[in-house]
Every structure is written in structure tokens, then in C-alpha cells.
Amino acid sequence: MNQAKTFLLMVVLTILFVFVGSLIGGKEGAYIAFAIALLMNLLSYWFSDRIVLAMYGAREVSANEAPELHFIVQKLAQKAQIPTPRLYIIDNDSPNAFATGRNPSNGVVAVTTGILKLLNREELEGVLAHEISHIKHRDILVQTIAATLAGAITMLANFARFSLFFGRANSDEEESGGNILSLVIFSMLAAFAAMLIQLAISRSREYLADDGGARLSGNPLYLASALRKLATWVRRIPMTDANPSTAPMFIVNPLKGEGILALFSTHPPIEERIRRLEAMVYRR
Image (cartoon, rainbow, N blue to C red; front, top):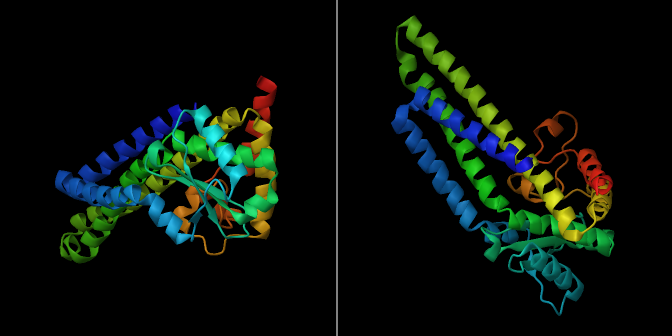
């Protein structure tokens, strides 16, 4: 279901890009915006693991340093039929975890020291299964494609505003000015819509990873219990140095997204994620 939803959202995002591109910048403008966005996001995609690991000062740990963690990751990776990801630890009291890597062969799982202190073995297995599910489903690639399309639409919207103030805006024809203004308003709405679709794709992939992680660990309640603890403790000990651009990678949002900000969260509501996981138990 979530795979189909992601596909549908990607189709809508693509159609929106083509429509906005042809309306605002023509074919040439659309191609240029897409090429720039693609280049930026390809660089991010290719070096995603190095960038984010360096950003949080993560260090790779060997099997001798963390034997239990390595055993769990290796067992889950074998079950998922992917190469065993490299394991990193981040020295941070805020409990969280994320996966990165451009494909399963370059997969990385990182956990904070805070999550190691907070969760028991079963809950930790649920979290690691969730992250390995992200790697198996190539979610970094999916997010990169979505970011490329959304970024291109935003560039076209900026181009429309630039045209209003520095280009066609100097036209004396009132009708022309009105058309340009309408175009700018539409482009801004399109960019906002693209952002919402991108967020919806991110939330859809989280649900998919929850489902896949529950199946890998063998018990949905492992992850449900972990999420319940994480929801409480991330609010108490937020990751104050977290970069908003990396927030979608974490199993729970490291930033404080409360009130209206929750509408623009990259993560689904924790309560709904727990409800779905618990419902899996009764469907067996």
C-alpha cells in the first residue's frame, strides 16, 4: 500500500514539474532547473553517508567494540538478504538512529549513545530492523529523486519571481503585468505543493520501514515499544545540533516539531505508527 502511495506521489510530483516547467520557463527553463537540481542532489546522494556521518561526528565500531550490536545487524541483514551494513555510533545523549548509503552494498546504520542507554535488546532490534528496511527499500534513492523534482519546481518558482522584479515587470502593459503576477502566485503555490508532496513521500517511506522492520524483527511490538520510549525522551533531550536537512533520515524527528510545525514534519505521528504496528499483531 505504501509502495503504491509513494509511486503515485512521485507521478504527481513529476506531472507538477512538467506542467510548471512548461508554463513558467518553457522547455529550456525546465531542463535547466532539472539539471541543476539533479546535479546538486546526485552529489548529495553519492556522498550522503560521508556527509551525514561527518556532520554528526559518527565513528565506526568494530565487532570487538560492539559485539551485540554487530550480531543483531548481521542477523537482520541476512534475513533481509542484503550485505551487512557498516555500524557507527554517535556520541549524543538524544536517543535516535538513522540509515544511509546510496545502495544496500554501501549501507550504513548509525545509532546514538542515548538510544543504546534507553532501549532494551528487543527494542533495539526493532529499531535496527527499521533502519535495515530503509536500506533494503533504497529509500535514500527515493528521497533523492523526490528532492530533485521538488528542488527543480522551487527553482522555477524563484525564476518566475525574478522575472517579475527584474525582467518582464518593467513592461508598461497592465495586462502583461497581471499575467506575470498570476504566474508568480501560481508558481509559489506549486512550490508549496511540491514541498507537501515531498513530505508525504517521506512519511510514506517511514510507514513502509516500520512495516518491513516489524517483519524482519519478527515482532511488531519491539518497534512499537521503542517508538513509545523515543517519543518521550527525544522531547526531553532533543538533538540541539541536528541539521534540518537530515531530519528525514532519523527514526524519529530529532527536531521539536510541535503545534503547526507538526503539519510539515517529515515523520508520521508517533501515535499512528504505534497503532499500525500493534494492529499487525492482531492480524496474524
